Structure formats: structure tokens, C-alpha cells
Image (cartoon, rainbow, N blue to C red; front, side, top):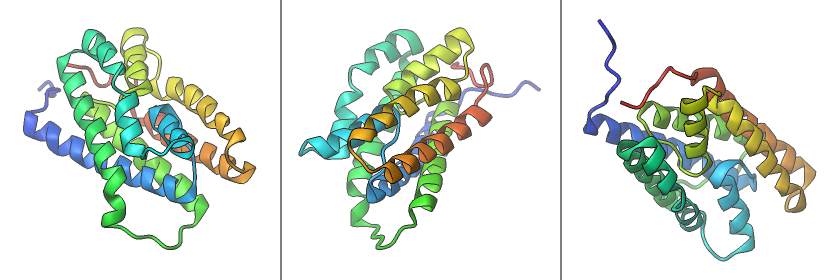
Length: 200
């Protein structure tokens, strides 16, 4: 029997909320340790150090221009699901401190585990025809259109973005930020192959 690729709306909503919670917690670990990361999330983390706005406010706003590409290139379902993912991550990442208080974090563990959490969240989003917006939309489009691994494509861009942090954080924090970005994208590169999941 041919596997069913299309998920129902309740399945999508449950998966996207679950994935968004994982991503938000990974971002929380990054923020607690002062790490940077790639993609639009990385840009938002950098801007939180330079502006008075929160991560969620910046992350939600800078993703808005990418919805045009998503709508015209990826379809309505992908666009709506991505909007939900971005909105939930923005909301939870700004409010996790209300339910979680962590006084002591090992930075190496936080870099690896935070990266794995965000990577797994993105993987679930991809499986349910969604992304974290921004460069994730571009990476998914490149994979579907040109059969180039989304993980490898985004890893190259993400490491470049993290390197901007050379001017903002210490070399040790920057090194751990790169470690987190590598952990994140390894999850996607290993588990999300071109042609495995298609938009239906």
C-alpha cells in the first residue's frame, strides 16, 4: 500500500505546536548562554543584542517578507503552516521564562542539545509541510526545485551568519555557537533527504 503523505489539519496543528515548543526551548538554551545561531533565528538573536526588542518580536517581523516566496513558490498549505510555526515559536520563546527557570547550564551541553532540539523541531515542521520561515523557506525551495539537501544548503549559510558573531561575542561563545549550528543542521542533513517528503 502506498503511504499517505497528506496529514489532516489536526495532525498538522499538533505536530507544529510540538515542533515549535522544541524549537522555542532550544532557542531558550541559546539565549541563556548568549549563543548565536543561523537563519532568521540567528539574525533575531543578533538584533536582540543591538535593539530593545525581544527575540519573538524580531523573529516574527523579519519573517514577514518571506511569506511571498512561500505563497508563490511553495503553496498555500506550506505558507499557512509556516506562519503558524513562526507565530508559535515567537510567542513561546518570549514567554518560556514564565514556566522555566534554569539557574545553571553547561554551555557545551546547551550548544549540542539546543541545536538538536531546534533541528528536530525543524525536521518535524518539514514533515508537516512547514518551516521556520526565512532562510528555511529558501532552503526548502532549493531542495524541492534543485534536489540540493536543505540541511547542507542551510548549514553553509548558517555558519556564515554565526561568524558575524565574531564582532559580538567571545571566541569561546562563538565556537559553541558554531557547534550548536552544526548539531542543528546535521539532524536535518541526515534525516531529510531530497524527494523523501513532498508537498501534496
